[in-house]
Image 1 (tube, rainbow, N blue to C red):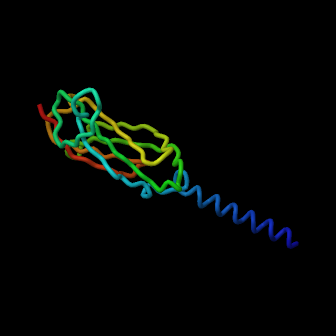
Image 2 (tube, rainbow, N blue to C red; image 1 turned 90 degrees about the vertical axis):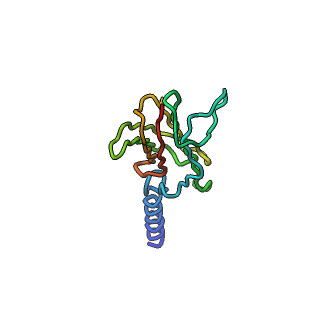
Image 3 (cartoon, helix red, strand yellow; image 1 turned 135 degrees about the vertical axis):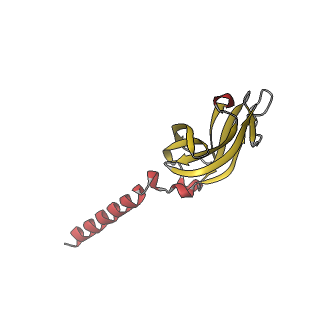
Length: 144
């Protein structure tokens, strides 16, 4: 009987631990991820890509959103997560792009870009989300 109780206790503990690690994707909450640097950039000039922050991008250039992330290294590989970039003009969505990325190691860098000519001149906002939770947001202008 004691052996049976021990087996049931061990099984119950394993089930409870299993449930705890299944909470959210990979057993972590997106709020555990920290943005430590992010920019809107046109990529700089020259042959090497540069992350020079700007709030205004000319139509002849590209507009990039670059987000640098960190999480506790003890969490290890966070697995695959759904990233979404939603571009707004006022309250209207003008573009939405998404991709699934494998978040193996911290720090981690994600980005998306467009030719600025795809946008009309004006003021825009882009929100970056992981698994539906906005983690980063920028406002910028497109000019001639």
